[in-house]
Image (cartoon, rainbow, N blue to C red; front, side, top):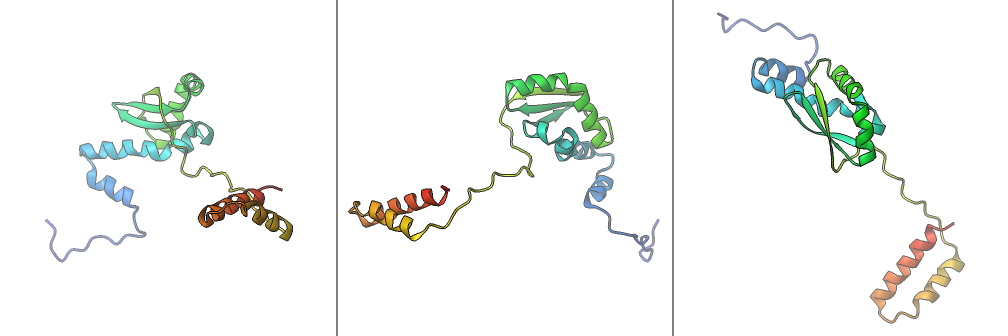
Length: 161
């Protein structure tokens, strides 16, 4: 039995929280769930960005990983790659958790690091264009509506080269 004065051994470096959780949950059902949850963390890198943008894990049960796929052609193609995908995911997990893949049609959220399209470039309007926009808006009597109309025309012109 440890005495209250006994000190724990000094750590050389801080331990990652995931390691601490793993140690704390060792031997409990939650330990297995923690391992299974890593599937969502490794999926994008394991299968590659192209596949990940069309297929994402949706559930895992008893070795079967269910994947939501955004289109029928991708669903069919991924069926041909089943064994390869299982291998890649298990390699990334560093253990054999996934024994079967089941594909289903569904909505797919692209990977988090997917780049959004850049907003359209805007250009500075010259005096002649500004004058033309004002002339077009003059025919609108209501001041609020005129301002909205003017803004729409200006934005349209700023995005045209």
